Image: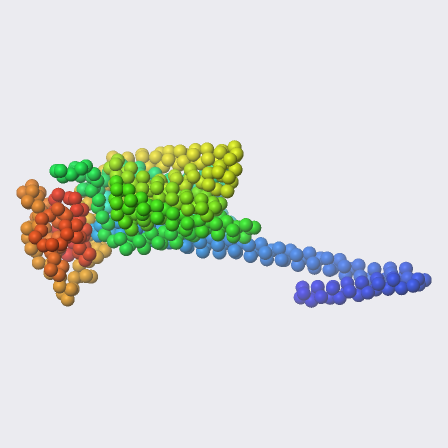
Length: 567
């Protein structure tokens, strides 16, 4: 109907132009009379034409606005779904880095973090972080009440963002934190501590942002904060049994490495984290419909991958060629270095040149190696290296970004760029203090109440059977006669002589046979054996249901064969 009206008006205008052109003919005594008739007859048509044209413009404007809004909503929802892959990555990495006896437990806890975090952020977090208020806290839209529909996609994105803070803590206290504590710290960190911090640094009226603090993707606000919380939690709860036991006679004092049970799970988790990080940083632009948004999203995703590459190779080479850091090619170190490189790149991934992105990743990889060595020296047990990866990598990125971005000190060298570095340095101090203010009293109170850590007996036997009655690898799933397995109990002849006499835990030692080699799922690596299988290989079976701490001097009780709760 509108197009037909416009066509009629265009035809009338054409007629008007044709009539007006008659005035170019020689002078006619009736000319003025005819002109008044033509103009008077078409005046109404011109008004109608202008009104229709204005209505069309408004219709086009509304259509473009709706398209812009839909594009931003699709951008948020799609990239948030990709970002959620980080939760899968964290779960796989944590599962692979713990022993089989705690697989179900850590999988449950890493998933609880996501569910508790979503509900806590829905109830409290979004209101504190992004609703109307002052420069410190917001106080509207509790549980999304009266939230405008066009804000839901961004709220969904911020909800997934907040899960990272709690998930990293769960890995740092793996294999010894009591399950109810996850509900406590998950609610407080996701619903209150992190939202307030994110408001200060990201909300348009936040006091840190107004000062000049710049953290595009969360090197400080997400990774540093969660890494600092992980350090406080791991320090208060203490190390796992056997992790820093006194050294044996003739050995130098050092921490005893407790290997996880599945390196392939760790690798899969790290790759999922890389995939999730691409969406994580790309969505930090918070828009795709404004001029220049596409370029910034491209920079963010490309630089994220470059940072991961720089961090991975740096950690790999440092671990290989510096003799006091391993002197071997470590896949685990490489993948952890890649995550540290991505934690570092977040702060400036939107505006770093390509070479600066690689350099930022390299700094993240170096910071990770240093942080891991520092925790070893301080005897803080962090099974997933959460502090070294996220805090140290994030700190390196937050403080290097003001130098390396296109408006930074290396390019501008003016007072404004120097102020940016000062604001980021202040932000780092604020982040550390805020993490300590929340986590130190919280975990100290839980420890004082006697609910922070599981009993030693349960820690040694594993939590899957005792707490969940769900074994990740039940015997019935792998024990088959055609594979030549034999569950015959062979006795205690693999137990070191000094432990037979002094440790009641040596009773009921379970041995298993694999082909021609006897594999003791609880035997220390130093146990003497007449066969030719290397000691380190003797202590690990790919198909039994428990790995060993090769440094333990005592065997762990095997309560039942079917539950396989050996270390």
